[in-house]
Length: 114
Length: 113
Image (tube, rainbow over all chains, first blue to last red; front, side):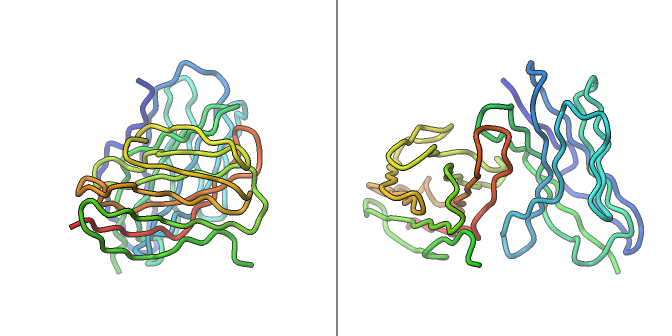
């Protein structure tokens, strides 16, 4: 089965510090996309960052960056200068190129401590 | 700039009743999706649609029916609701053919008593 695993059910970080959320996945395809979504208490799913597997360069979006290790099938999210508004559930997802079916991990709850 | 909306946001119903959850998007996206979110499972795909009048099953389709007569609407019907269908339901849409980012609605919280 092709799965996405988030091994950290919950993480905590001090405000202004850096935190890394881990994600690993299982796939036999070479062409796919990876995503991190944020789900705050409002439950709205918000795209944080996206990575194309064929790109070696790690994606970045302001304070959010990824460490994409294709051979290791690892896709971690680093949040720098954490803010109270970053507190949320974070979901990792994989999408095979040419398909529409996301495979989601079970999520990591991030708490930001003031 | 409505984007993608869902209604109702909250619904309580009883076992055996029919319930329809609505989803509407204003982007003219070709693809639309229904997911359910349950604790410990992340999001699981129920049905998806590639265009008007084209739908297909996802991972957990049993007990659900969809239709798509217009590009912008994608209703999800629970024909005879069961307690196991208590969940949060998300509609999503995307513009392209594979590899495209999906954009999610705000969700509908459904409680089946």
